[in-house]
Length: 475
Ligand code: UDX
Image (cartoon, rainbow, N blue to C red):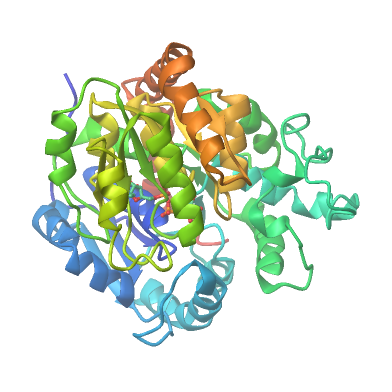
């Protein structure tokens, strides 16, 4: 029987949470916020006005207003400094980060002082949070909502540069990386975070990552959305740099063990028609295809995926997020849909967790955003990886080579490869992949269950936060 925590009015620990304004990080940080509220900690989640509008339009914000955790949970919104019309796509991510880093610090500093915040939880990339924490004398936890493998690759950047492995000396992306402890023999140049390709050491984003590598170890602790069994070998290296790691993932599953309240953090309205379509499909017969909230495709790339899927003979559920495929704004042409012979279903945004948990889904063709991977792990669904940007290149390598729960098609986008990989995961090696995915799902679930490593790390985090205000304030 699950222990459900009461949502009683709250004691006086108060955490300010500041996520990156992207779907994946928002999901993770909101789950953490809810877990804290359930243990009588006040939480203020600071989101940008743009994200607030999207949560409002998708009706997600209402679910938080209704739940509210006895008044312990609140949103605050701040400007991101960009105009309302600014597209804020992946191409403008640097501009968003730069603008937010300029606008947010004074507002956050004011909030922390006025609200008597006992600690800050900020996304790892926000190095300015260290300045705020240091200036006001409030403890800071960095929560890197990406994977542990991506964080570790970022942490190794200074030594990769020092050892001359970065920038790459030639075009051979298959060269293995030697100066990332724990990743030797696993990571090739092509598996490093996407920014490493054609790296310019003067690029502001690289400078930010190097600053992050310097500042994160100085924080009070590092929160990660992973679990010990999944990343045990990497964590043993990470502990040397960060003695205080809280590995509390998969957060969405940990939250499910502690409350039956149902909140949604989706920034796009979900089309639930795909669930009734799935209900009519045979067990484990459908490949679910989604490239997440930010990744973009050209029309040619989309067509390679489409024909690869159709030629594989598999059934598929495809998310075509509005604006994600240049030149297909009016949807998928009728003749393509007809060519799929009723085996394909297309929606603009799906209730992804529910889809992955559905008995009809047998595999996930994913861009390898960290939330998507964790949701697939918990659902026990093998993956076919088409990484797009940031951490996704490292994540997909771990899916294919370390956890062995899928195949990595990195750097290729060809209908023949898509067809071959779908056949392999859905037919030829189906049992092998499903069995490994089942074992991993069990490990994930037991880590959040009673006495599991993530449940224990969450207890420790909560104790530390509650005791923090008793400490003399210093950073
Ligand atoms: C961002 C970054 O780009 C990525 O590199 C990082 O790993 C996470 O954050 P994003 O596209 O938001 O990527 O990916 P992901 O972390 O997978 O989050 C997407 C979320 O949207 C998932 O929780 C997923 O359940 C949800 N989703 C996706 C839906 O609810 N419906 C969909 O149709 C597609």
